[in-house]
Length: 461
Ligand SMILES: *[C@@H]1O[C@H](CO)[C@@H](O)[C@H](O)[C@H]1NC(C)=O
Ligand SMILES: *[C@@H]1O[C@H](CO)[C@@H](O)[C@H](O)[C@H]1NC(C)=O
Ligand SMILES: *[C@@H]1O[C@H](CO)[C@@H](O)[C@H](O)[C@H]1NC(C)=O
Image 1 (cartoon, rainbow, N blue to C red):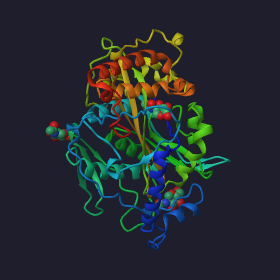
Image 2: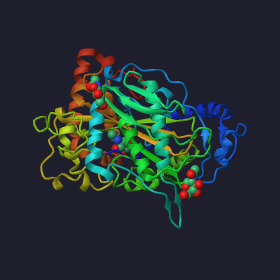
Image 3: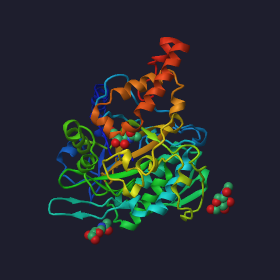
Image 4: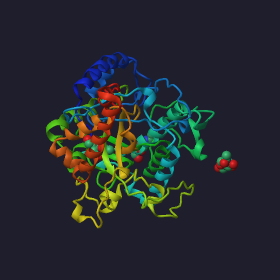
């Protein structure tokens, strides 16, 4: 249901990005460039190496993930209550901020539910959910497979989650190489054996990786975290191609960033986003990951239709009913969009007349769906990891928070026509606005202007 959408930076985040550029240049001097056949050369300024690069070429750099502060046990944490909407005019922008290194992946007490939802999806949807494409050789473009990147990614993630969430993961390391060989997700008591790392000891040459091995690595990577993952690989034409990942794949796999957005009918993409977004991907260096949030409204099945939800440990798709694993439709909104396999890309919310039954829109069925998206370039293979964590929050809960209903109603009212269409607003906006307005009015009565128009929280909260 999510798409690879980024918008251009808003004024506030531009200064952040510019500020971090200066820091990046300084840190850049510390990179050690690896040469395929030799010893590490002397430090090379990252900004130069980016400019000198031929499209599709990437020289591995040594970039140890910066120190990470341990988080409390995620099983004791509630999902972070993102409220990523603003008062007043809506701008189509990339809206990116610098990503704090501690916060690459967010885990919380939903981690076991996401684990089983994903396991079920992998088992039942196969290459429509998880896949890595082989090298592509066209007349126009060559793009490498993401199989090496998947190996790099699973090792990066295993090291990261082990340091960030020490109470939820335990690892054992290979005595000789020091790399993680096994990782256990403690709350589900599941242990994975990791593939051997890309770099053998004493070697500076990345080893070859088969598609099958890459896909196995990707499966593990996906199950370690709550995010969906996309590996974007630069082609010889300078474009970024979706060469592998775990997501709704059938409408996106193999496409370039441009194609994904154009076919997804992303509002104002060509006018406002395309150039800046491509440039951002091309220039992205390993030391400057970014983050953005967005939101929409989702209508979920009414309570009496919803199944209770289950957490099963078997990988077998015994119960081929997504609703049993995913009653709140985190992975696919079949209640509002119809079956995943027949949903046409870029045509959100089929017109109501095409739907077999009417969608029931009541406050109890309404969710604010928010995506937290991060972009990070992997140092050895140069692929960009696009990670998408989906949160859903009950509208009824949001409506009780100081200032939130009035702010959300203001944000929804400011969506331009194209954005309304894109977000499928027709189905729910009347019900949502009526509900939020009533909640805002109640806050005004009970807490006064100060409560109803509370602006205390900093974006994206
Ligand atoms: C965890 O799983 C292992 C087998 O993989 C089993 O031997 C062990 O008893 C389990 N531990 C718990 C606490 O369930
Ligand atoms: C990887 O495979 C290619 C082509 O099969 C081969 O030329 C190359 O030497 C291999 N590289 C390594 C590190 O094994
Ligand atoms: C996030 O981004 C785009 C809009 O920019 C949208 O297509 C995607 O579905 C969004 N997700 C949510 C939950 O709004």
